[in-house]
Amino acid sequence: MKKYIMFAIFSLLALFITSIGPVYAQAADAETNWSWITSDDRYGKFYAPERVRVVARQNGAPTCIEAWIKTAYTAAGAAETIPSMGLSKEIPNSSDLNYSLALIRINPQGRTLEYLEEIFYNKNGTVLASHWYDKPRLKEINSQSFDENFYDAIVDQVFNQGETARAKAADRWITLWRKVDAAAATSATADTTTIRKTGNDVFVWIWQENRNNSGGSIIDIKFYKKVFNLSSYSYKITSYSEWTPADGWKSNNASLSGNYMSIIPDSKEDMEFRMLKQYTDNQPNWVDRYQIGTASQSAASVSNNANTL
Image (cartoon, rainbow, N blue to C red; front, side):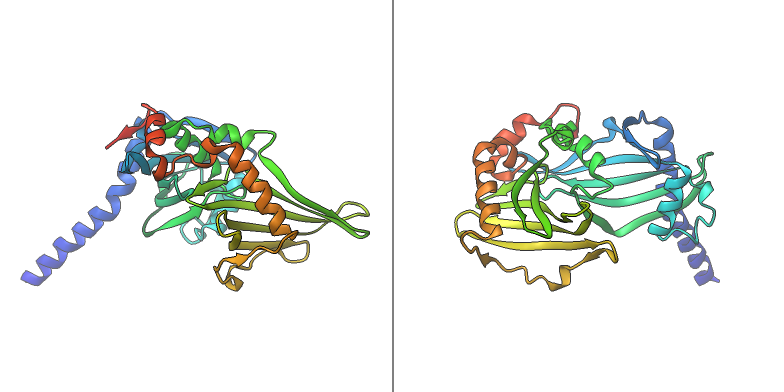
């Protein structure tokens, strides 16, 4: 009899633990003033400014930020989200999905965003699905990230260094090199929102596009994350995906060694190296933003609008 009582107690405790997250989030939604970030024909994006918290620092520089975000779905957005998130069993009817809340964690030094918890609701505020991740869903923020707008707004609140403005700037992308032959024109551009310097390493995402000269149709796109070492005149590729009209996007990360390679003079990497070094020399405050090594500048720029430890 005793073991049945203990089993019942543990069962109730488990039920309480699994239900407290959605209940807390739902209450937080009702009590929170959501600030609009952006919207399109599929999604509306919001965050809660008063719920942005700096939860860790190193040498005075914020290294971990937690925040709540909200996503509203149109019919098209819900239909896209449910299969991509593997929610078809929990939400079989996409028209039921109206909005979701998520607790996220941001590391500005690594330009990453983690999802700790997500709760999906219908229009009446009823929970359709709830997920607490033992291993948070980690995303690195670049131009292809759904989460880029959330990241920019939250990091700007803490640091006020212009992430949102840079993402919308006309010169967000800078041309690194361009090659034209009889058949095609190939160019590589660097996303300045992603450029950051740590020690002698410069991190950047590069978009390489190959177009047919007759008609201008895209032959292929290569999307790289590269690291250039300014002192050793070398580079490595840490992420690489490719798009073709026939196959769409495919990841090639499995083929990467992760090792630094020497740069060959007058190669495309040499042109990328020189252009990026020029950019880092001309924009030291931007490329060094948020870094622990420049904690005095980072700490001085932290906004009073973020709750801190």
